[in-house]
Image (cartoon, rainbow, N blue to C red; front, side):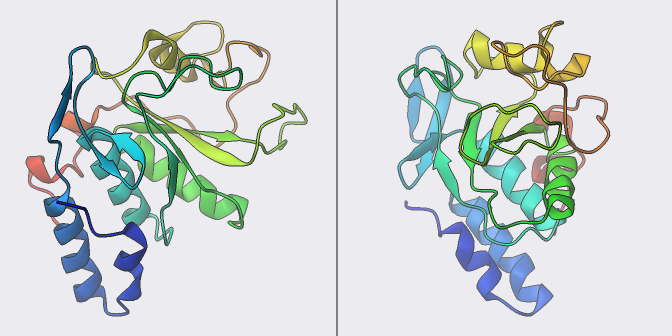
Length: 201
């Protein structure tokens, strides 16, 4: 079943309708495929992703009142010079962030941290260090075995990982985390906003 496009969620002006739409989109998402290494996954458009990415980021957008959440890349893609092997597995996606104020982007990043995902801000030189990328958000799920080691290292590596204050750039370890204050890492499975744990919009 093709999931309802995420931007339709915000076609509803009444909060009750928005809540119902969120529940419907989450309920419609399916993971009919299984990768032998990275596990189950589905897709939104051409972006392959698992429920940890899909539901966690969608609910983060809801909590932060982000508006339309658009994915430009998911997982199970070939290695590239700019992404290395971070998108070879699942648990990683890219989202559109352009045209949003930094304060709103920070709200989304902070909400995602509470929903089992880290969003790395790319293509913006707030810290005067240019990464040479197109402006976007690079998302990585916290914990689990759904990612290529290169993606997992973006969170855990002691030189450039999020958990150690880094920006998740192996080739630019001097780039530090830019975003809201870092939080204690929480997986999607343990998030209080995971519907499986009783949360409802």
